[in-house]
Image (cartoon, rainbow, N blue to C red):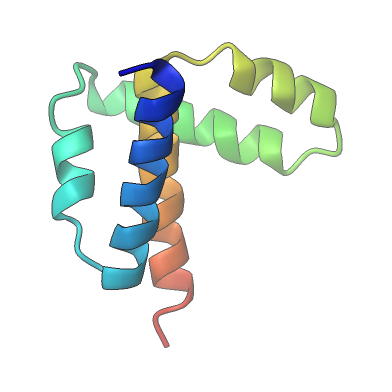
Length: 88
């Protein structure tokens, strides 16, 4: 399966999970990732800080240089955040 097809499959899975509020599929994507808690905290801190700035080029350059695992962490974070923001 090509990277684009895998990415589309992951994206569709994320959207289904968001609608169902079932975190099982997300856990299966995140749990095998080899990183420390500090790695995740640093990634999320960078993401939040850069996304709040008005410099889209800086954010885009940073985002484009992330690896697949880092992209997965950010996607799962955004799904969780979206669920909690729209809980009520």
